Length: 157
Image (cartoon, rainbow, N blue to C red; front, side, top):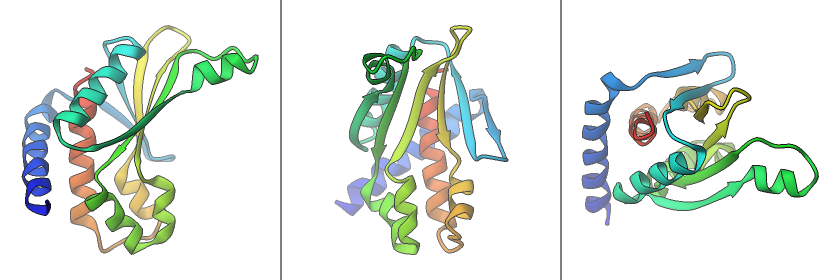
């Protein structure tokens, strides 16, 4: 199982390394949010993320359609979906370093449409998560997680 996960992770890292030069993302150092502009609709962006997560063998936890919930509650909410996934072998290493890291795991990518109709995928920067929880002894794991999320979100550009 661990060998298979390592093999999948190695393949994911290779894909990320290939995709990174084409990847354009904006990280706001003040709040740790990384945004990636998608060239697809919210629905198609979510489909592409889900497909890539499945291809990488990462556990998919679900999607929350925030707009559907908000609109049903009487609010005018633009398209917004929260996609949740993660690799338990990797993600829980953060929790073993500091239990409060569970607030940031599983990985969440917010796919939303802004007022101008542009679609974005946003996620929390893993270096920021490490600092937030004071985790200094998992640099390799945070680096791997960063490469995977960059690879996953590169599928929507």
